[in-house]
Length: 267
Ligand SMILES: NC(=O)C1=CN([C@@H]2O[C@H](COP(=O)(O)OP(=O)(O)OC[C@H]3O[C@@H](n4cnc5c(N)ncnc54)[C@H](O)[C@@H]3O)[C@@H](O)[C@H]2O)C=CC1
Ligand SMILES: O=C(O)[C@@H]1CCC=N1
Picture 1 (cartoon, rainbow, N blue to C red):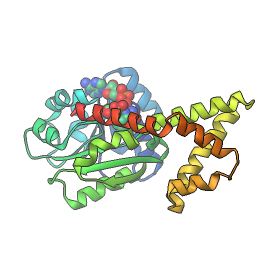
Picture 2 (cartoon, rainbow, N blue to C red):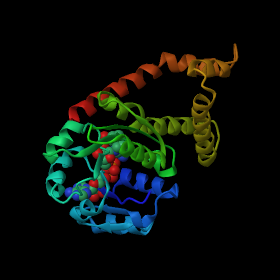
Picture 3 (tube, helix red, strand yellow):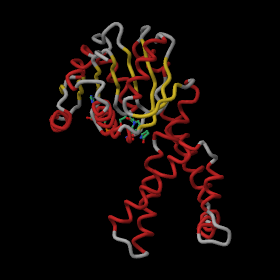
């Protein structure tokens, strides 16, 4: 990959993608450029990743073949106004924002332009991201393959019909937050039972990682894997019964519904 990759916005998610792309060794730091408003942020990003940085969004837009809009949803219109006349004619614009549709991007640029709607997540930083992407019809198959390759540098990627994109924050974009809450709660329980904090985080996080990998690598149904842990008359089924009584699954579904509705309201 020899193209220039630009990021307008250099916050948490942009840095996770930059870190993941560089970790893959498929892209050199000189190919990346990022802009942010504050000098502190650009200096921090430069020091952390040794990529090009600027406080001028137009400089990124002029240079990038693949241009990530890594800004809050409500800033898209304003920033597209700022850059739309200097974006390269064949550039592919990739938003990572919740709720920003392909139609909104096309209309904001007010011309036929190659646009991709994506929803990554923060584990991209360590190459374990999960992203979903959707392209408009101006993006060719070869270009989409190239974008998939970039996203694959920092994790798994699914190409979806855009009508499913509002569902993605709830299941994989935002869900690391709920998983961290679960790990924190597991660790609190471990500490309550006498483990050190450090031991508790290691034990809890590795159990979650291992359980997730069992689903991906064995292809077994999560219910079957759960049943394998529950010894008849044993300790696990007591915990499972308590989680059911306290509405664990219902709480997750209800949280996801709130996330989905909020995502839809952002569009
Ligand atoms: N944090 C997460 O886990 C995920 C976030 N996203 C999406 O990523 C986007 C950014 O979110 P975060 O990185 O979490 O936020 P953040 O607040 O960490 O980063 C936002 C960045 O935008 C920059 N910015 C603000 N105004 C600007 C302007 N006028 N010109 C250039 N840059 C400007 C800020 O300097 C900052 O670097 C959001 O749209 C969010 O929906 C998507 C998936 C996961
Ligand atoms: O909280 C948000 O709106 C973004 C979208 C997915 C993760 N963070």
